[in-house]
Length: 115
Figure 1 (cartoon, one colour):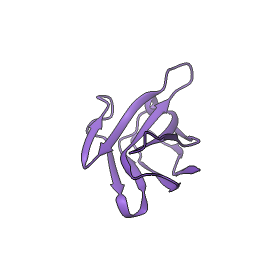
Figure 2 (cartoon, rainbow, N blue to C red; figure 1 turned 90 degrees about the horizontal axis):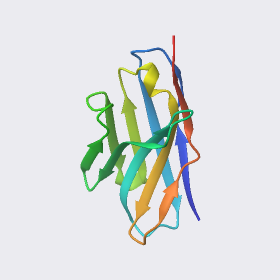
Figure 3 (cartoon, rainbow, N blue to C red; figure 1 turned 90 degrees about the vertical axis):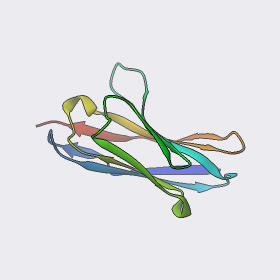
């Protein structure tokens, strides 16, 4: 059993910041890729950012505003979100891939950007 526990979502005004955290635990054969996706109402789930062996990849819409980082010792991935916009409003999901082919998802955390 693998568990991903997300935290850090909430309501923030435009221009504000939030930091999402996702902690992975359980039986994994080493993590090689961690990332964040988001899904807004009526839209498909989309990639926000990924990190693998120190290499990061961002959606164009968040480049320069969001930063993904990872603590390997804690099996934890973070998403620092700055200069938030109303269009960033969505449920954010953590995703973890391990070396055995495991593909795990968190339960999602709501981020709402509104004045």
